[in-house]
Image (cartoon, rainbow, N blue to C red; front, side, top):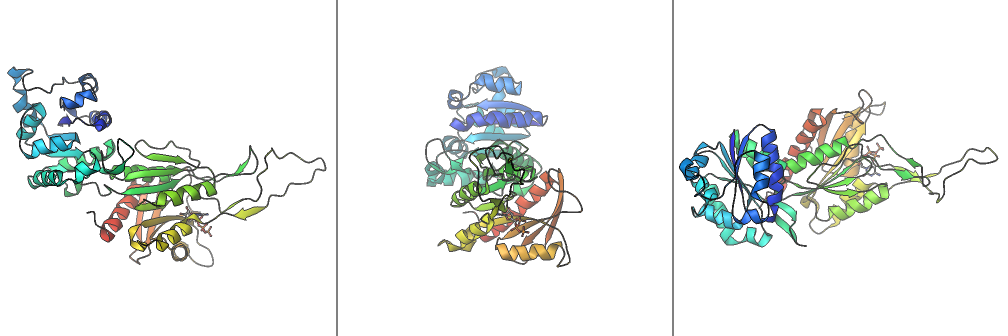
Length: 413
Ligand code: CTP
């Protein structure tokens, strides 16, 4: 596929290098057209090297090739990232002062704008009107991500992560109406991995959680346009790019991080394997073998139930239950008291979370494996939903269920 990648003059231009790589690695032929202003952030040499194609932003370069007509005509897709307020305005009013705006006027295929700007500029009536105009003409304008902006401020206006723009672009080319990122503007906190509870400076009580499920969820949420915060306990896999990582070790640290992160999260997913108990005492020095050969005794105390506390915290705020979706995980086995689903249903009621993702353990192992099979139970009482496949596929199913629940309860403004 021939793609024209227009780069606007915003600080987020540097992120577009990753987007370009995603396109070229998928086998597409990309011509980059930076605006004059954008070359102050990323030079043309970067685009030439990464795309393997010549780069120009002037209609007067290679005039004999009539680039201002040809590029737009030939493109199967035009993506503009970052689409600044200025570029959106120029596109909406049909200006044609440089090669990119000429190309936009000549484009025959789908056009995708990925905006990035300060929140006030995004929310300004002028920008809103320009976005509406462009959408009204059939262009796809993504919702920007929410989160930290260039300065100390935060809000909607961040460029969606390159993987999210890539996913939207591919959906658009396939003619899908749901190209809009379902979690754009949402903040999702995901805990992952297994906590470690220290006994002394060198020993700990741990568990077999690899963190793969939590990381796969973080990737799926990021690709759905969410602003993702990963609370990473011990993991065997690296955290993905494009998510904010908060490193924790113990259940108590995870509790503190989760309660703090929950304050501005639309969704909290507790996929970490949290130790239910911790040693009552942590020795400052390494515990030694005793001379009298007696066996050491470790006394355990209960850790707080973080999921339960998150639900209580949410329900006690003035905004009430509806403003946040809380998702728990459960690894269950059937026994003489009931089957897996009966136990899971009881846990869902006990914990009070909105969704419970149930892994059936025992018959096949879950920890560290790449494939899994889950049932998603909802407190609203809707039918249990099954999902199986790789952890990536299952995570995508969980994230789209979350997006569905979220958009049903509080549609995006
Ligand atoms: N969880 C938590 N805090 C804990 C223990 C678990 O937040 N101290 C969360 C997990 O992250 C998971 C869910 O609770 O989302 C269910 O965990 P699980 O260990 O299966 O449930 P328990 O409450 O420990 O129930 P039980 O061991 O009795 O089955």
